[in-house]
Amino acid sequence: MELKITCIPGDGIGPEIVAEAKKVLNKTVEKFGHSIQYTDILMGGASIDVHGVPLTDEAIATAKSADAVLMGSIGGDTTTSPWYKLEPSLRPEAGLLKIRKELNLFANLRPAILYDELAGACPLKEEISKAGFDMMIMRELTGGLYFGERKTVTENGVRKAIDTLTYNEEEIRRIAIKGFDIARKRKKKVTSVDKANVLDSSRLWRAVVEEVAKDYPDVTLEHMLVDNCAMQLVKNPAQFDVILTENMFGDILSDEASMVTGSIGMLASASLNDSKFGLYEPSHGSAPDIAGKNIANPIATILSAAMMLRFTFDLDKEADAIEAAVKQVLKEGYRTVDIMSEGCTQVSCSEMGDLLVERI
Ligand code: NAD
Image 1 (cartoon, rainbow, N blue to C red):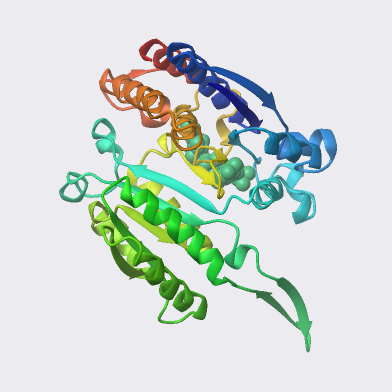
Image 2 (image 1 turned 30 degrees about the horizontal axis):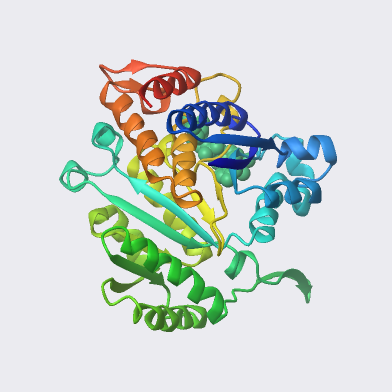
């Protein structure tokens, strides 16, 4: 198979971690008899510096012509970088919102897994962390509060800001279907998270999710209020399989779940549309504080590349090979600085990439 992949190295540590992911991908496809055609595009600060905008229409067209997009991360230091003196629509993150909207990437998948070898990094009490956890947060990505109408006005000398949270039943139905489909390949449980005791958008969410659930009698559905879910993630994370939720709740809960693993450099993500197309990127940001030092952990990006093989190309064996290599290097005690612990061997970003390549 020939894989057409558009890469967005991006800003900060982005170019370093994408280089390692490409190394691992190249070895994997070579071993399994495939080939890859890469095209790079600029996005975020890197695009602002060259084109004055965080994402050009040409870059979007290139991304659309590929089967999948592999991204590092974008953005700079939000207090010191000149990119953040630009008006909001020209800042690095505007590129990310634009590509998600243009590619219709409405479903965001973020696995939060506690690896046995990294259990010590989990900030929870041992009596909770020893149960382990492996959950998938499925977040709606193109609707809700972040895309609703917004304005700031002054009324009688008082400034007032208004944001609008809107969902229609089609937006809810398509993400719910994705959530149930994924649950079917896992432990067959969906926890739908909302604020149905207060918000109309949540009451519609709950009603539509229940309609969809009728087509999945083999999957258990439960509803949970978002404030309870935030608590349950630290009290009993093992209870979750697929957490299905809207945009802003998912933004916050997925970051909370990441922190509960204690290893932000390990967490992959995928954003999918109705077809097999997806954008794959680590859950973390561009880490400007460590950019250019060859110390970043490339594993989140490498595991994102594995998700790409699995979800876009249906290359499950190839994805398994990458995930097994990651488990193997952890077992052998190799760690980048962010996950380093006593008795382990500290390696750089590129050394971690090399170790993984050797184990594919
Ligand atoms: P961050 O995730 O970049 O960094 C938080 C902390 O985690 C930092 O100390 C960093 O050094 C560390 N870290 C992150 N990834 C790491 C890795 N792979 N290996 C080792 N350590 C790692 O979050 P931030 O500092 O809040 O944001 C920095 C920039 O990234 C901002 O401009 C923000 O807007 C942007 N950002 C981009 C994305 C994206 O591209 N999707 C996501 C989140 C943040």
